[in-house]
Image (cartoon, rainbow, N blue to C red; front, side, top):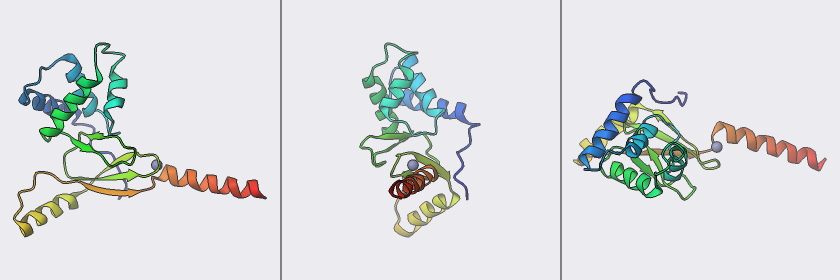
Amino acid sequence: MNPVALSKTDTKSKEERLIQALRKANLRLTPQRIAICRYLANTDTHPTSQEIYRALKPEYPSLSLATVYNTLSALVELGAIHALGDAGDDTTHYDPEIEPHINLMCVRCHRIIDLPEEAVAELEKEAAERTGFRIFGARVVYYGLCPDCQRELEKEGQEKQHGRG
Ligand SMILES: [Zn+2]
């Protein structure tokens, strides 16, 4: 199966779901917080708080990194987004996709790709049945090298060989 991006057609409902979550957390729905929800709903790059801050700051000059951070924290606590802390670059990445899927992480460029996978939901069901656990969420992570990094490493290797000759 090819690592295809998850459906883009439901970004509006995704945004609405995140805004609802903030409402539930009793956070004031400022234009900045709504912009953060919209940004999350429209990205599949698993941004960090810094990246979101930098992207929105030009349009929202009064935005602070603290606002970005506490908005993301509230969404994580409510289970509306996932915090991914193990991409290997010592920062937390945020994943607005909470349907069962596999995260593929590149250990070289730290990109994270989503792979929708029915089997993840099946596995969750089976785990619950076999252990009696009530499962709130799951993460399946594969580590490796993305196709771009594989190509770049191959190219670097070839250049080194030629340089030596
Ligand atoms: Zn890579």
